[in-house]
Each structure stands twice: as structure tokens, then as C-alpha cells.
Length: 334
Image (cartoon, rainbow, N blue to C red; front, side, top):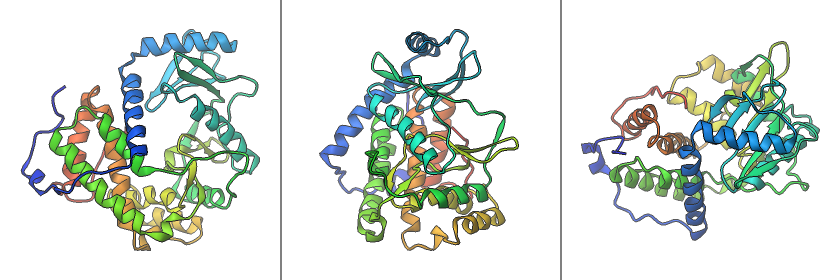
């Protein structure tokens, strides 16, 4: 596919520093590139065939399953309307199994979560894990205040001894997606890498960001849903890990500061519900905010080779990050 974005004069501002990352991160990037390309290249029909084989092994019926979302995982509602299936990337069975254990562990620690179906085991087909989850009735996304309250509770949970949670590696995540984004022009790829190198150095220098807490890792209002007449339920445990609690506060702070997606009153309610701590006041706020925006851009870049809408969005996001579009920015959801 042709580049998603023509080279502009802004690329002349790209830094010329060399790009260096650890061998461990390089291995993660290479493996993730293969996994993500495999996921995006599979058609819905192929994924459905895989799902039906997995359902047969699990004693379930997937004939007529409805696709709900095809992102990092392909998510389907089974025809019985009592089971949601998550089809993962190749060679992620260990992570998928850990997500099921995390959901149950959080629930046991008084955090309401979306739970796996009791008694139905993970099935692996062609190296891809399929897990089975309880569907959630009619619901809405959480308010900022509701999210702040749940994050405050989550961050008081002690680091578990019964789960081997990984360390949160935002830099490694971004590296993998930049490397696997075949639609990126070489100048854009180099610019993103230069920005990431600079921010990674700033991150490593912030000693107080090295503390260890249980973090969700992708804390936004859509990953906390509120059923009609019910209490908030936490979703999506792909990135639950050990890291600094600020990573869970940055998304809403960035939504307010750079995108004006939430009002000042709603952001104040988020801060209040969390206990009064405002991450914007930290000296390293801008480093984490810029990394969050690189993360969102790299996610879309990875989809751009197979989705013209994503290619257009990638072009827009790069223009924003490179100073061609003034804040507040308007980015489409993916």
C-alpha cells in the first residue's frame, strides 16, 4: 500500500539522533509485528471458521455468531446471547489465560469485573487462543467521576503473589506497533522513532515513576461500563500489569488538556473521585502525555495498511503531533 501521508516540510524538523532500543524490546517488536499482521490479514470468514472450531471443542454453538469488534482481539457474541468469545492473536494463549485469572482475582478483591464463563476452558486453534466471557446487558460508558472512583480502588489493591503480572512497558508497545505499521512513510517512521527515543530517556530519568502498583494499563471510560440500573464493571485486561499509577490517570488528563473531550467540571470530578491527585501537576506530566499520544497514533498506524479510514486518521494524527494542527485536536475513535 502507498504511504498514508505525503512527505511535508515538517519532516525537516525530525531529529537526527540514532535509534537504539534493547535487544529484548527488538524481539518483542518483531514477534508483535508478525502477530498483528496475521490478525489484520485474516478475514472475518476465516476468523469465524476458527471460532466455530474452538466452540465445538468447548461444547458451545458459534453458528451465527455476531462480530462485535475486531481490534487487538476479534470479539463475537455467540447466538445463545449468553457468551462472548474473544479470539486472540497467535501465540498469546499465556496472556489470554492470565487475563481470565486477572478478572477473577480482581473480582475477589472487590473490583467488579467482566468475568470469564465458569467451567469453560480456553481453547487454542492454530496458535490463537479463544476465551469465553459473560456478556454485559445494556450499558453505557462510565462518567469521569465513576472512572476516578474505580481507579482509586484499584490502585489500593496489593501487588498479587498469586499472579505473575508483567511490568507495564508502554515504550515497548509503541516500538512494536511502529515497526509493524507498513503504511508509514520512512520519514514518518523515523520521526516517530526519534520522538520515542527522546521520551524514553525522559521517562527513565524520572525516578519517582519507577514505583510499582497494579495498573489497568488502558484506563478510559469505554473500559468501565455501567449496566442499566447497575454498578460500574471493569473490562479489558490485556494491559493489566505492574507500573506507576500515573499511567491510568494520563488518558483522561490528555483528553481534557489536548482534546477538550471532557469538560473542566468533569475532569475536576475525576480528580475529586480519585482522591484529589491531579496528574497534570507532576513535573513529568508532558512526557507521559506525549507518550500516550504516540501510543494512540501507533495503534492507528498499525491498522492503516488495511483500512483506508485508519490511513486518513493516521495522516491527521501525525499532522497534529508535528505541530501542523493547533490544539484542541479532534481524533476519531478506533
